[in-house]
Amino acid sequence: MKSLLSITLASAFAISTSFSAEVGTEAPAFTATNTKGEEVSLADYKDKVVVLEWVNFECPFVKKHYSAKNMQKLQADYTENGVIWLSIHSSAEGKQGYYPPSELATKSTAEGSQATQVLIDSSGTVGKLYDAKVTPHMMIITKDGTLAYSGAIDSIKSADSADIDKADKLFANALDSVISDKEVVNPSNQPYGCGVKY
Image 1: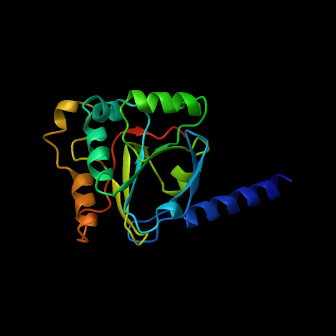
Image 2: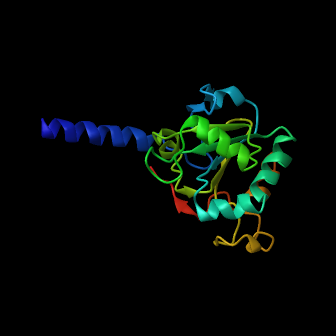
């Protein structure tokens, strides 16, 4: 029985990792529930540029960008121009950053989120599928469904909001390139932040 369980777990791990996202390849399909209890699928946004933002409002690195209103401005500016922005909460129940759906909706509103959808991924399914490592981990999917960027929001790995204006805007530069159908410079880099609380 123990060996059978080991084989099953090993097989499951192989399956989950074989379909994980890689920059330059097709973004894996997923469905998650939003704070209203509605199912949201990546397929709903076919032919749209899609941003995936992994978020944990208790993380100091996330607080850096939300307290300075940097993340909300990015959300508002790009969604106004047709980009779909999905904020994904992959904290497991009982761990830092987890909120029940109604509380997460309230918290997101209080933080001024301008995301298209706030998605609950407390099982970690979507986060692991995309190998999301930290909050914030930023990803960009092109109109044709290719994962074009996976990495940091900017170049200064600190929790100090004073560093935002001084940093190289890695994510925003990549998103501008995707929108303009240009090649993304530095499309895969090491994101910084708090480890995702799977």
